[in-house]
Length: 139
Image 1: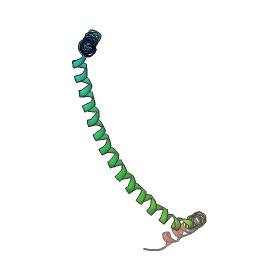
Image 2: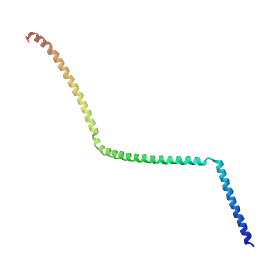
Image 3: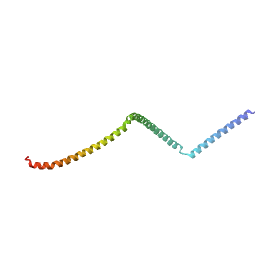
Image 4: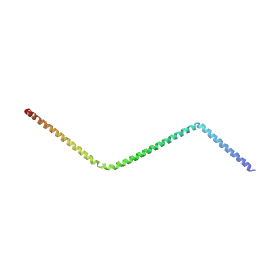
């Protein structure tokens, strides 16, 4: 006597739970359709955007790899330059010697100008008497 009514009550309870779950899912579906009727279309757009993002990330990864290779080459070049900088320590002494050579060239230019002036003066001193002597000579 207790088992049959318990089984019937259990069946009614299970049927009520099934009906409750069925009604709840149907209402949720109706709410979703009312909130966003074109949800499928928008999800397709989202999928396309994710595909484009993936392609862009692949391209960016390739570009970053290329930059890494170029930075490694730059690093080796900078290392070579750093090794050659030890030869540049004599640059200050070379700079002083070049300044001294520049001063010496200025002195040589002044002396050459003085020689030019002396030659011009001597030419003027000799040319007048010689022109007078040339008038006496037969050739």
